[in-house]
Length: 318
Length: 321
Image (cartoon, rainbow over all chains, first blue to last red; front, side):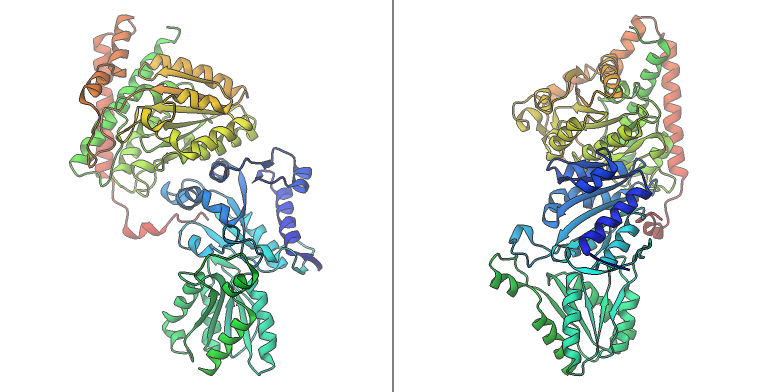
């Protein structure tokens, strides 16, 4: 085991897959000096600021015998390439009747709390969950991001990796040996018996911190990290809530039509689990507002440890 | 003409096949056999034909919503095309795509694309793949005057140019995006001038003269194949039908303009030339007409007799294994 940062773990995953597969090509507006140094200009390319063009190029490459990575940098810039992601990448396998596959990875950093204001702060993964044909990974730790990115780079479908900007320096244990993590397999980051907290990305860390606190009050929290939104491990989430009888979902995205909404739905519409509920499920999400710049307002817009704790106590006392 | 007789006759046959295919497909839409829409290529046959006669196996094309001509010229099987248009299980896309999404990856057809301009970035990727493969293959993207208005056109031209990709930008200027004339929508009214901003060779060609199309495309394809970067050709042509069939959107183009262009039919003009030069006689032409009609009839019969997909077939192919 070694201790490395989330960003480093991501870089390692890509570097290892580049060594393994010489048909892997990286496209980004920023130069990737380390990767370019090792693998050269042909495979690690600098693009103009033309998101539609380079996401489309990634698709064309993927459909022509290569595997591509399109690094969109920020999720907010991704919207410029929405046609290529939604009308093309998501649908291209299907509408051509499965004639070929399109192995490609789209990377986007996301989230709020960096004081980067409205157009550089967003958590849009639910929008892409609603577009069949894409796979979505949402890793929260160095271990998860390395294993999931490597899996993504061996998956024959378009995969989007959402990587929270504030997680980049977070340190965690990563095995020395080669490993990949399966999609559609949630990780129980902390076992518990009184309430299930399903948390996404950076909110996993916040929820674990709150779980420690409320343990002193005698509340036993189970923290479930889905790790991938498409495919989503509905079974693990349902089994956990069937066990605890209580659900809190923590998702920094805006509340309306969030991934959190989908998670609540999959619990409530299941007869077995619904009948075990001891309290209505609660969501702790971002407010339905664009992200403001000034820190007191930005903090107000987002989930906090206080809000998570309050939701947990609410379902316990219900 | 420096082109051998066999090639000349083959080009004639290809144009006629495209014409008869789209006439028949339009008819089948009108009589209810085709569930959706078709965007007929009638009038533009010389462009697809002349460009594709220069292509090799291993070259890739990306087509658009008005794509039947490109697909046929690149060698697609008209039976599987017709079956797809009829929504049958035996179609190229198992009935999942219809007219606008026909593809045959086995012969380098990376699909017809229904979003104006969206094929350009994808073709840029196919061209990059060809460059990285290093086997001297190229990519061709077919698009219209409408696509030249989209951001994706500007971006793709720019990217293909700075990376010197082996991509032929084959622009079919049929003058209209639905009912909007290109001289209104394109600032400066000149597609070649617009294209020349992207630091690549550009030329405008009579898109209704299949020999001129072939010759111009040959110059371009040779350069592109030799690794000298992308090339833009504007083919000036015209579509005979309205934007699509069924005619839900009225065709507002001036009637005398339509009639004028019909007099410059690429097939009739080429026929005249072949006869004058003694390449074929009337009997040869009749024979080809019959063969083409038989082929189209066969395609329709295949489509009619093929089964529809089962409803639950809708669940397959969302993801690759």
